[in-house]
Image 1 (cartoon, rainbow, N blue to C red):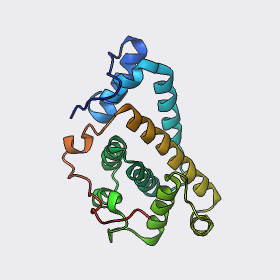
Image 2 (cartoon, rainbow, N blue to C red):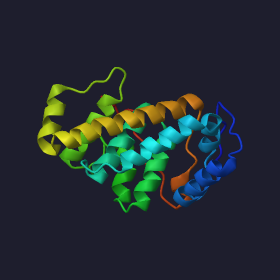
Image 3 (tube, one colour):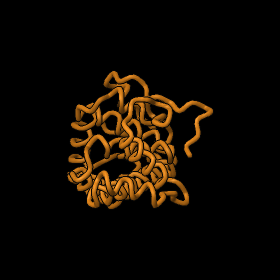
Length: 196
């Protein structure tokens, strides 16, 4: 699905553009509109991709927990592009699709362990304005995950906030990557559910 962005996508050209399009096609099956939007400022695109790639190389935090945290953060901020992309990539990485599908309504779902719930609670709390991470939650995760994984969790959530808020400000929305590979729609939080 192509949506109208606040900055119209431009043609992605040149040698670097060809490389970016090749990487997008390999990873996603097509070149998303968001690449054309960010192509207006190639430094932002290049540095965001570089940082995202470096973040994917971090391994102190379990991959499943990292995915749940990123998606819980994206859901809190409201970035449909981020949620869809992470659902799609979780599928490609062999994560439990049924569980990943439930992240947007994790508080209502019985699919998650207490530790997974604490990680998503942390991601959600860190994504609020102002952030609402408590000492108690931090202490619990420090004991369960260790200091390196907790630092990684905080950094992953911070990067997701940067990406999600940039996407929302630019009007970048879901391009239905998950639907294109046959995944059922993400679960939606019920109207009465509270994020607090």
